Amino acid sequence: MSNLFFPLLSAVALAVKANFVRKTRQTERVQAEFLRSLLKAHQHTEFGQQYQLGEIRTIDDFRQRVPIQPYSGFAAYTERIANGEPNILVADPVIHMNLSSGSTGNRKLIPVTRRSRQILTWAYLVAAGFACEAARKRGVPLGKMLFVSSARSQGKTAGGISYNFISNSDVQLLGSLYRQVVAYPYEVFQIADTTARTYVCLLFALRQPNLRVIAATFPVLAIQLANFLAQYAEPMIEDLAQGTIAPWLTIDPPIRQQLERQWSAAPDRAAALRSHLHTPGSLIPAQAWPTLSFIITARGGSSDFYFQRFPTLFGETPVFGGIYSCAEAIFGMHRAFNTDSVALAIASGFYEFIPEDQWHLEQPQTLLPWEVKPGEHYRIVFTNYSGFYRYDIGDVVEVDGFMGTTPLIIFRHRQGGVLSSTTEKTNEHHLVQVMQSLQRAFQITLENFCITLSDDRIPAHYLVNIELASGSTLADPEQFLLAFDRTLKEVSVLYQVKRIDQVPAPRLRILAPGSFAQLQQRLCDRGVGAAQFKFPHLSEDRQFLAGLEVLQEVRLAEEYAAKG
Image (cartoon, rainbow, N blue to C red; front, side, top):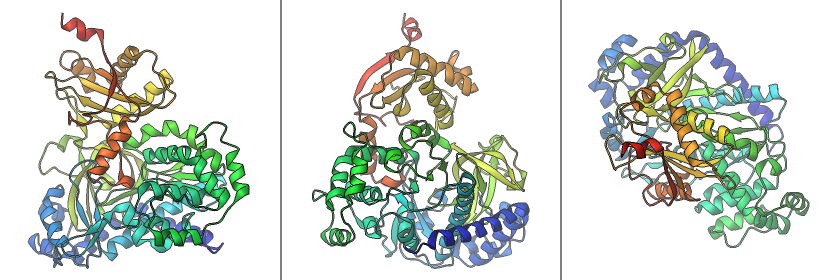
């Protein structure tokens, strides 16, 4: 790689970011122009003719003519696109289809065109510009990145269109960029076996003491990567010393041969890493790469729960959120290290916001980006070049302020991602706040948690399912459960009110070590992509954790008293 690549990338990204910042001062004009251009481009599609998009002249016309719909309103169209029919939702040829993760519902297929890819690339560059600016302020350089993903397609549709999970399709469709920025040969992304691919990614990255960036789609995946490093540190250091790639790894022979040609021994580096193995499996990323500049991973929503564990694994390395997006859309770009809010991606889509008092309506009245208020929560609705028009994905965001006239938003939770014993509607944001507080108060580390409902009574008990991290001990489970109940009352007024005489006392269930790893494997076996995996911290599916071993169940005294 040329030494000029990262300075060139930085210069381009900073210029694109500066252009975006100028646009944030003219949000109304930028949004109107985006919508007008999109409607003109798609007016002759089947959807465009059905809703007479060519006759729409104003934003109000658009909102009156086109209904707000969830994905189910587009499913029949995307199925026809997958079968090879052109000009259905988008006028441009569909070159690929993104696959949603399936972790929050049925999987969805999302059309990808060259134009929609260009818009996503533009958003990445804006985010990269903000990251470059943040790195300059902190005095840390850009450099090679560790990102474990796959470039292998999941398959092809009946119409012959390849489809993949979005992070995997990024590696496929932006291959020339990834060849420059990752710390290993691009062929590593072609390894089919997940364990082998992760091992080889880390092996090549360990050779470089000045690795600058670790990227993971979600924070839980960054933690799992650190755990993998600890588990396989000794054989990887041995491979580094001997110039080998472990023969027991499942790698297709042609790929193995390509990798071995690009691999050689580095005994001095191996010796330096071995000095950290005071106890088996003790190597952590902060020791392997002490000069990390930053970590890229999702912020906001349930992701924030995992950041309490980052200092023990990554030291004080700052975290940059990249872009807030999903398989269907881009919502915003992060602007600084260690912050949750993003600037709405006003040049990547047309956005509307549903106020809380309209959430119960089938066709609610929406607000436009310059009309929202800081501190308020909204459901976000989008229209974009992937062929979605007024799509209500169910994401609930909080407005954190403005950049110019463009709102800054924080993802809080997915609508429907709520738990109700009666009608209290506890959401993931509530539960993450509670668990972060309890970990500090009880000086413990949780591997993970998920709140479900009991099936032995109506209204149901909250089941507080936790797995303690290795080395953590909960000395007083009953006090922990009391603190859970008390803290949830503090962060959720509805829970506080309903607990008086409607919601029964919660119960604590301490799960066996490895329980959430079993759950992850179970979900991945059902087709959830490994790189897109995110644990739900609540579930109304009362069988969601069925089959996991419960070491201890704790109930509060009030429950026994109520039984007489």
